[in-house]
Image 1 (tube, rainbow, N blue to C red):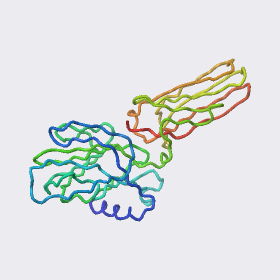
Image 2: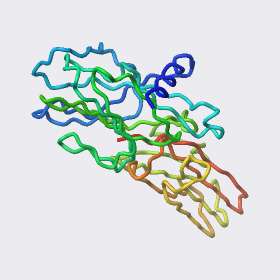
Image 3: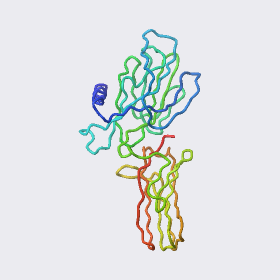
Image 4: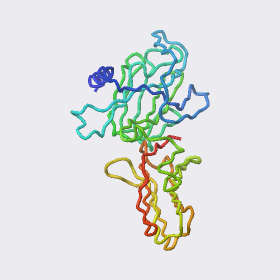
Amino acid sequence: MTGLSLFFLKCEGTSPDAKTLLVPLLVSADSSASTAFGGNQGGQTGNETPIAVDDIPQAVAPTLNEITYITNDANPADDPYSTKGLLQFQKTSVSFKKPVPSNTTITLYFGKKNMELQPDGTVTNALVTLNRTAATFSGYTYLTDADKKVKVFVVAKNEFGISTKQLTIGHPRICADAPKIPATFGDCNDHCIEATKTGSIVELNAKYKLPIQGTSLNLDIVGVSPRSFPEYIAPSQNLVIPVPNAGIHTIKTNFNIYDKEFLCAKVTSLLVIDNPMRFTIANGYLSIPND
């Protein structure tokens, strides 16, 4: 696996589409440190200079810098249906604010939303675990389904303390250009979808502005996964009015951003009205934030 990881890391340098991202993270510098949470996917290249390991052991607990990574499409030979992505951690992706002993352990855990970090640095429900030391960490490439969120814990530990970082990341393909919340799809002077967020709840509001009194109005709203085999993210809701009055008609649905593991949702609203005769669809891809 190490040889394969190094091969991928070497190849990514030739890709013009490679992106370096910095993610706000969960930090616990030592046993007396408080816990701080970060969260949104994406970011920018870190400007902290990585500090090398120290071969002379010191009474210093590890304090991780921000973790960086890049994403690439998977090799077409391994991904004929264009549904995979690579999360690539380079040698410099993991570094420390102060020199640490070379035998300081570095462990990367990859999993889904049910993966949990315990106070002692142990992790439950991990799907993949990578164990290295500060002296031997040379990078790692993780193959994942595109457009899905991956939870990653980085745990550095030595006899003096523990430092941890949490990432919620993914490789966007269909979701690459999905707008962030708040967002609007369609024309709200006619038929549109408005997306807003309060706390962890995203609300989708379909609107239709009826110019005159009509007959047999049907207006619905739904949010589904961006994958070719869709599953519900926001449940379907339907408004039926036999004789609708002129004015704005709305129907709403919502979802919790923590309920699903996709980077975006496909939101769709269908409008059908007999008089005045209309049949329209408002839709688009909506980015799902991490917090």
